[in-house]
Amino acid sequence: MTTLFAFLHHFCAFTLVSAVAVELALIRGELTLASARRLQVTDLVLGIAAGALLVIGLLRVFFFEKGAEYYFHSHAFMTKFSVFIAIGLLSIIPTMEFLSWRAALKAGQVPAISAKKLRLVTAVIHGELLSIVIILLCAAIMARGGWV
Image 1 (cartoon, rainbow, N blue to C red):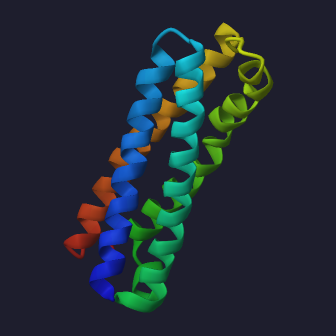
Image 2: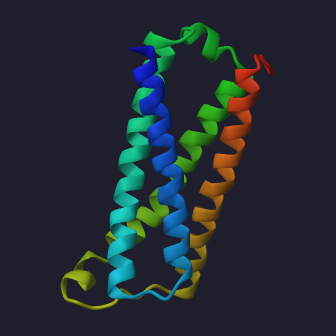
């Protein structure tokens, strides 16, 4: 069972990284009906992957790995977990923007996004990518038993 949950955890993590990369590529291009719809679907996949990653990760912490006491006393884990939660909260910004496009897309219109909002959404997506790097660093430190 431990192997299955490790696989699912990694699968969700790679799905999340892929979705963030796709979002960045789409948001940097010209906004069209097709790209706006793809952004909405990609953001949904990202949200599902992030939620599943959180649940599976917590199941691993409490039931399948070294135990909650070990993880919650690790600075590397707490940093990793905190960055994940913080960027998850920040990712609400692009999600709300993409959801606000529903009416325009349903009417067959390209959604309007101000230059300021576009910069904000793009900055959050860049922040998500940077946070992934920090999370990977913390995971490597944890794997070596460091930063306890």
